[in-house]
Length: 178
Image 1 (tube, helix red, strand yellow):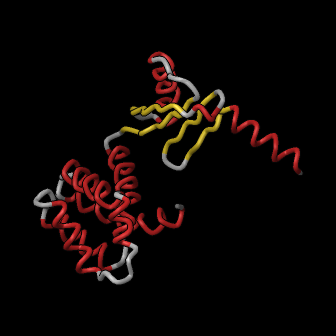
Image 2 (spheres, rainbow, N blue to C red):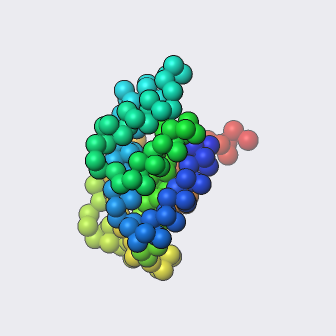
Image 3 (cartoon, rainbow, N blue to C red):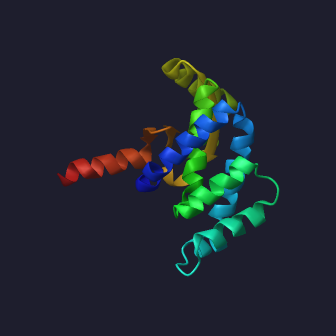
């Protein structure tokens, strides 16, 4: 996963800079979201990994699926990715683009994974703490993962705060193994 992110970063940066120059971050965000959805499909993943299919076929196939929802620059981007054998990086490119977009808009996306449903006041408190830490507006997305046992994991960009019981047990296990 880290290697994919490293490979995707130059593409995400280039697209972000192009979108900024065109003053069209929202349109590029939507095009990359669509490309992410197409490429993330399990049947599409099989096609992308099939060595018998050439880059031109794959690019045309993706462009046919996306119909007219990509601009000329968006279609060219699909061809560049296909020619480089990087269409499978679309999810990481989309994620990195969205991080840059929200940062440029003064917003930081924060994912909170908890063992239980968070009340709105709890989400607000987390948002306040994170806003003070980053000095920006916070956009919180919350989801439940009962395997955490208790507590929560907070992710933003490359930062992870693991305050879950599962994380503490894992850490304790590592310390005891030493």
